[in-house]
Image (tube, rainbow, N blue to C red):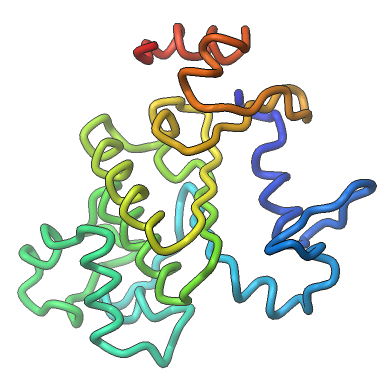
Length: 207
């Protein structure tokens, strides 16, 4: 849906930063209000549009949320997020400094590192909040491949106003003015929902 329609609010509700005024949110058949809060949040990984970076090494940035992670687990996460190109550039491998706010990295590399960092917590659900919004077309395509790869081991929820990010999703939820207006695949929504069809036409998404 367009900006301001409630996509990020849904993520905040999932993580219980807010409690729903009515209705319920169910994870694994259980209302999330019945989950102990630490257990719920441990099951969720979150990647925002501009992920934070330490002025430290690649290893330090990857292990930020999982300080006891092994090098083997780090390498597995890097492989899953297809960061081989970055490792080829870094003379010191995992001990290479990334600079202030990751200044040595491209936008696509930053987002893939952020996803790898989230995966090291072994989440059951991965939330990507406009994670491709500032990427160019080449990097966005690479990120779609990464998301598809990650989806083999976790449930991935992507909030996006750029439709190209989500056209291959198993299920797309269309938001409009704080409400859910339609659910379906890309092709189903193009055929059945006026707002989605207009967004697809505006963004030149193949129907």
